[in-house]
Length: 433
Ligand code: HAM
Image 1 (cartoon, rainbow, N blue to C red):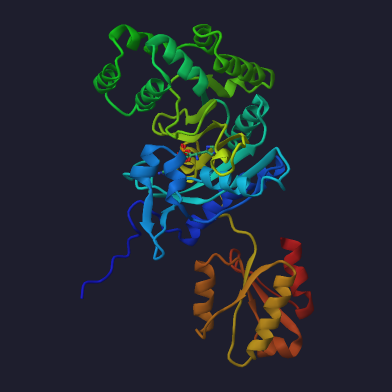
Image 2: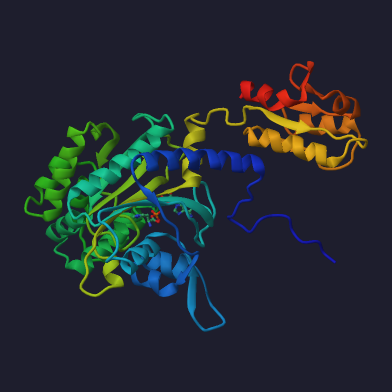
């Protein structure tokens, strides 16, 4: 019979202990930074009703990218491709009890049926940061400054990344002014603009022309891609979106965050639910040309679940794949594998196991990472094992030591051996921690 493959499913990753150490480190940095900024963690199920994504995520995600199936009870379900509809459901379900504004975060794994490539896999973990229940631009500012803070927590500076910001209301108003489109027409144009950097220029022009835009209109839109926020908003001074953009950029300047941010008319975001501010964080290194974060303001997601309700949300999602590419490219990963004290208690046949179990209990009570050797190999093999598994010390407790009430400690880096009183064991390592 043909053997089964040891490869993980296409676009997913196995995390061996070394890989877990890295991801636990970077999620640890993120969790600490977010908790320090008073965000609370939540989670939800991996399976949701498919309707949730059909209703709001947008055609690409719902139709092409979800893993979906019908369960035995005939329900149409999807493995979550994103977290925002889930968190909107959580908020809607307990609206009356929650204290707004909410500052929430989560680090779920998500599945999308995509073509695996650099920065894009079929399973990724995504840090989601959202604020619910604040209608003013203060929440947009807080969310953007949190995104910047997260990268700074890894030691990144403004030469390494830029937040590209636009506004959906502004976009729709400018497109309507230039191209004379209605809301649906502007939405269609936005889909082409969103794919601008992913398709050849000729295809972009053809798609715009198919939507009724002539060369002159296409050129006018082209000029917006390089404009500053002041130039762009002057084209549509009465738009609510213009006012929102100007207010946000002025606050960013006052908070000295403008060096991390740039206005970019090309930022649309593929998801349909955004209504105001939209942004994407880019790595300045050209090899990582995908957005590291994406997010924005969505004014009506909670309204999907509860009639006549309007609880706004602003937030972003930040993928672990793009984060790792960023940290590696900018050499921001410290030596997380550096050894701290880790003790192996070796075993001999003539000492009862209970003695070793009691010894390791004492070490663990003192917070020392330790284990009894699992198995019955000879002493020499136990030492080889300890060296390969990055133990820093072995504890040697043979029949002689037990009778004397002592214990031998071998330092595996220096090969020094020392005999101490048995009762001093935990203290010996505590002093070294
Ligand atoms: P998104 O732009 O679809 O937004 O994803 C956000 C980030 O997740 C991307 O910038 C990227 O870092 C990462 N990401 C997305 N898809 C993949 C993939 N296939 N492989 C690796 N990384 C990926 C959302 O999902 C929104 N729900 C974010 C949000 C939260 N908006 C408001 N709150």
